[in-house]
Length: 88
Image 1 (cartoon, rainbow, N blue to C red):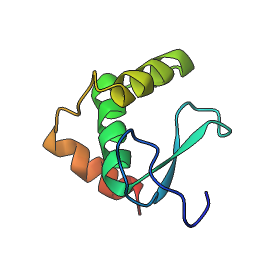
Image 2 (cartoon, rainbow, N blue to C red; image 1 turned 120 degrees about the vertical axis):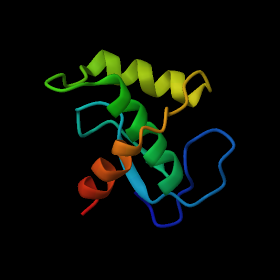
Image 3 (cartoon, rainbow, N blue to C red; image 1 turned 135 degrees about the horizontal axis):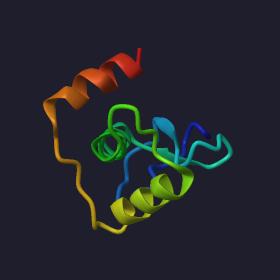
Image 4 (cartoon, helix red, strand yellow; image 1 turned 90 degrees about the vertical axis):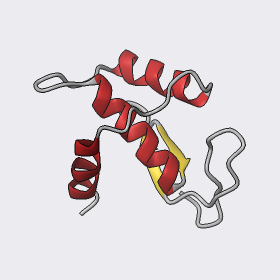
């Protein structure tokens, strides 16, 4: 990710802070600001479950729907703890 790169979420003008892995393939990344990285991470958490890892196609569909405004994170409070632990 380039240091002056902007978030790839439509309409966002914030600087990108994370290279989000759209799929489990490390070559498919998108630059996202902190807010939008948290949003898509929450959506992925909400749509996976204990013992269920999202498949390539599922992650791609969720990412597309989120970028097109069809999905919003549900805001489960447990997600914040998971994201905080994941970012350490």
